[in-house]
Length: 257
Image 1 (cartoon, rainbow, N blue to C red):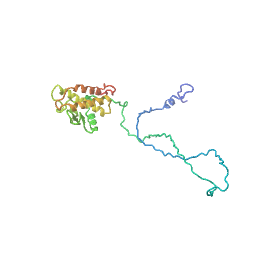
Image 2: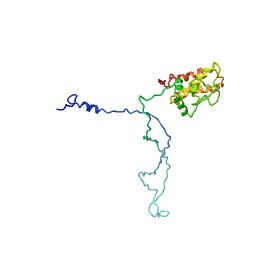
Image 3: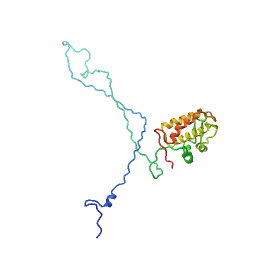
Image 4: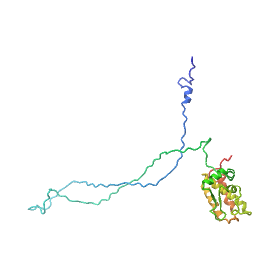
């Protein structure tokens, strides 16, 4: 005699059936976004004349007249005349527009093990030891990153050819100061500013970083090339906070292990 199915209780389904009936459900992920388009909505308004006739009354005027009516009698035995009235037509209108969105396709990426990556910052050390990442970001930015403003003052243009020097504190002089006490201060400033720009290019930013980068660019543009001026440590400190993930209301630091 064949073995009986494995049941849990008299009214239960077989365990194998219960296990197979549990669906593998994927929890949908919603990524809210807002888009807009300015549209012009128009409408045709038609005003149709209408006259409602009230109660018609006839009144006898003074005394009868002997003889025919003066003038020529109407051939239709009717009298037609036109009465006009100005009317201000107030038309309340409510304009609206509706939008629909429909998927038009998907571009597949490369699958990977683990959770989705989150926005986080990298330090000077990471970009220095990962030149492939650094060069890819510089190339995506058009091939160069200006530290400062064009060629003004102590500004310096970073490319894939010299990014390693900047990140290893060897920005050439000029524009970098060559003598103490500003030489080391400016080398650190160049490196922190480049790392901050690379983080922003890597889709990591916040208002704190935007302000810190703008301040550093202005400082370098105002600095005498090859000489420098006081204040570099104060300017580079916020950049370091951003790169190290400790800046207020900014992304944290990436795990670089």
